[in-house]
Image (cartoon, rainbow, N blue to C red):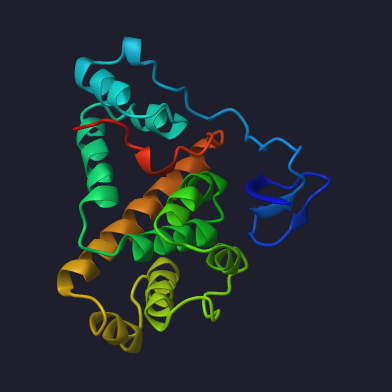
Amino acid sequence: MTTVVGVLPAQSERIGGGRSGIGIWSVAPDLPLPRGNMSRLPYVNPADAPAPVREALQAALPLSFFRVMAHAETAFPDWMRWGGTLLKDLALDPLLREIAILRVAQLSDVTYEWAQHEPIARSVGATDEMIHALGRDEIGDDCFTSDQRIVLRFTTEVVRDVRPPDETTAALTGLLSPREVVELLMVIGQYMMIARVAAVTDLEVDKPMGAAVYGARP
């Protein structure tokens, strides 16, 4: 069996997900990765875009999400640099970053985000047990270390409640430096936004691109 993320095919068994029927599915390997509907917004054609937008798109991998975000012409090039910084240049441990991103995706019930970040999470050390536990909403599972459970609880409470309880924040600040706490909040905020853009625009689920998602952008 092969684990993918998408809309339930008839031959599959659900092992995670949320409100809209989108989640993690264990499916027969001969089934194609499900794709969503056409986007509610048109995709930007790099050939028709202003030079800074065109250059940013050409330097990145060809994801439908980037081609929707590129409508924000003045913000898009800087946003691409910002996204690359969050994936490449933080003090925050990459595995903590990626399990937080997958937690945001699971809580937001968005296939697009999970599909892109599951392979990135695996590339920085996430195990099958971690991936499946996150998909089943079991963030207290023994496959996570105590430090990872703190990060997942904090992420959950930021997404659901905005302000985590003092107990959770104290546990996190006992684990991470102030820099890392702020970086974690930046990651959570970025991927909450990405999840909502993907959901509102009904993006098609791109083939996962892995850790090179921002391409050769300087």
